[in-house]
Image (cartoon, rainbow, N blue to C red; front, side, top):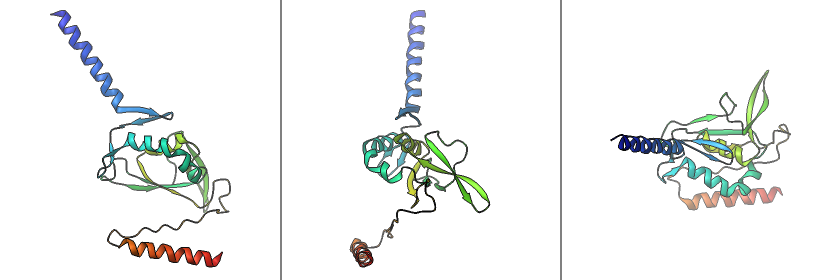
Length: 177
C-alpha cells in the first residue's frame, strides 16, 4: 500500500510539473505566461502560436518597427475580451521593451521602443494585437522619415472600392513625385 501511495504522489507531482510548464514557456529569451490562451478566437490562434509566428517573420517585420516609438492595442484576454490603447511605458513592462523619454508639453513620459526579436515577443506577452509605429525614430523624433496610409475600410465596403481608392492614392503620389 505504501508503494502505491508513493507511486500516486510521484505521478501527481509529475502531472503538476507538466501543468506548470504549460502555464509558461520561454521564446527568444522572454517568458510567455499562459501560452495556450487564445488571442484570436475566430482563428483559434494562441499566444504561443503568435510568438512562434513572429519568430518566423522577424527578419521582415523588425526593420519596420525597430527603434520607433510604439502605440499599442492590447487585448490581454484575447481579441474577444476588453482591449485598450497604450502609448506610455508603465511599470511592469518587460525589460525587452526599451523606454524612451518623450516630451509631452512640460512633462516627460516614457514611450516604448523595441529593438529585437525579444522585444517583439515581449509585446505578445503583453497581449498586444496591433502594433502601430510612429513615422519617426526615437533617435530623430522631430524628423519623420515615413508616412503610412492606412486604408482601413468598413467590413461592408466592397473590395473593388478599396482597390480603386488605393489606385487613386498611388496616382496622386506619383503626380507628386
